[in-house]
Length: 468
Image 1: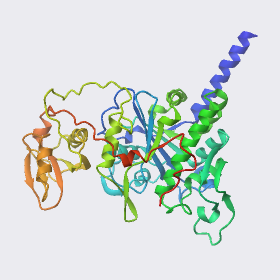
Image 2: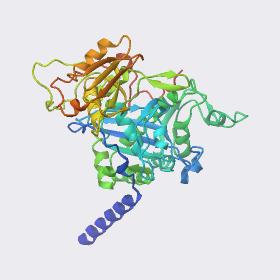
Image 3: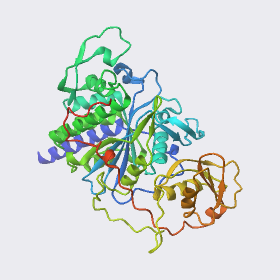
Image 4: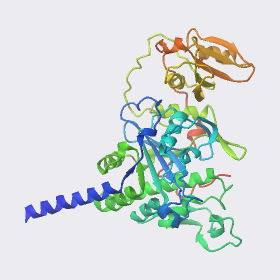
């Protein structure tokens, strides 16, 4: 009897494994950039979470986007600290104007760099229902200077199923919400969808809640992002309340794997489970969410420098939003030398161009600059690639900034230009010379008004739910 029970148990586990394994989709890692940031140090991890609103498949029944092309409706960069007892999720507004680096298309070709483009356009490059998660990952890495260890895409249908698997998610609304709030083109108010105050939602009602924009605050995507952060916090609270038991996790795992597209590094139940279990010891108070510092730029959103650079630097240094270390022991930088000065580029914005035929030189320079808190607006190939000497071009009033930049590139030629800009054009001298022995700059403190925006997972469910 005992032997039969063991065989039955093993067979059951095997069946569950095969079912979950059959659910998981992975995207092609060939689309990842050839010029990526350095590996995340220690045991810290950066996870890119993308919500897709394609109308393909079951998503169409739930009111996804207007066509079958995958679009990123929500993007959060989750930094799990090295102690695995703290985590911060940073929402990147979908309307943010960013540079999208070259990305691989379904036919194997690569796009040109796109400047000053809406962030969510990266996911749509290639115009497929599955979207282009590799392109979004490339864009986030270029934007933040952080290496993304894993990427997870969740579609609408799967998201709705997950909320049902946990028995619904508590939410709160500052006012009654009607059908017209969800669909502004309606001529009449329609039925009441959500009443003011706390309630539990699941399935399509949960999905509509996180998609809701109009009728609350200024009706912006920024305000919706606040409610999405509150929803994710509540979902995490619900899962923790139910406990990490097979009864709780199996339905959730089954729902989750049906809805996920992941990078090749997470493409098995064992890997997904290992990652999920690594997060179980994080207290709700130590899971925080905030939106990358932003401002309106007409109808779009511009990220605010140097505040957003300080945020990325804080995460890169594995420091909490209030500036504390979680105890990770860092290896000394191989380029650091005792007694050498530290170059601090906070507040200095520079564009980087590769003026040689050496691959990866602009990326190498970008890593160096970000280590010293310069803001890199983008990288590209220079008009000519025969530069023997590195050139720093500076506009009116920017000479002192050019001189600061030159400390990292000894022998660089300073060249005044008419435009109000600062450019670095790397030459063969930089390609053939090791990175100078300067100490990386200490991270600039994160402005208090940025850290004050953070919402912890145990935050009041009914507070801070809109903008404007």
